[in-house]
Image 1 (cartoon, rainbow, N blue to C red):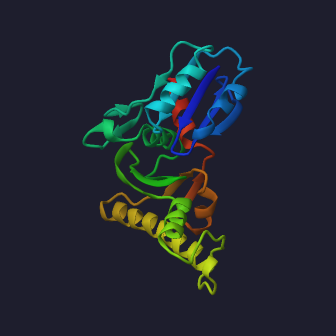
Image 2 (tube, one colour):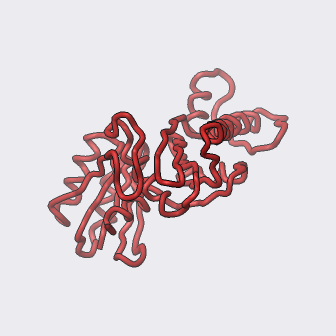
Length: 240
């Protein structure tokens, strides 16, 4: 069995794979990591644990302690210039988040054309991947809920309102929802434009993250939806 872990900005997500199929999944908020001890109490024997961590050293230490009874080594993904069939275009590969690197590795298996790799949760990342496996670079922007929280904290009257996307909002809740969605969609559209201008017109986007379903109906590219692209990338690594 392989245990794969995605320690993100808000939650730790994990999944168990037996080499043929996913066998179990779970998650816990960063401030409730003790829940993982209960989720992992009946873990079968694990041959290998690989993790992508962007949550900091404290979370890394907690995960190490929680898993000590199952295995004495966790492999923490570190981006490099080249891994599998993906070349890292970052000037300093170590500055690239391991979650983004894992997502790129996962996306590479799903499409062979030029594509955008989009993860949207607390933050949204939009990364450009060419058909021959070159990661050109990408952007990081606030995610949907982070934008809404910033708007609520920075204004006196708007608050945290649930709305829906309509072309011409006629109430404040829908205006907030629509404004944030257009900001996110516009960001993706601009990255699509930049790829076209650079001679790498994307034919699809690989979309993942907790708010992926909010974006999916509004994207012009062919969308490949993935439940957790980071875990798919980690799985590619342990398979090699």
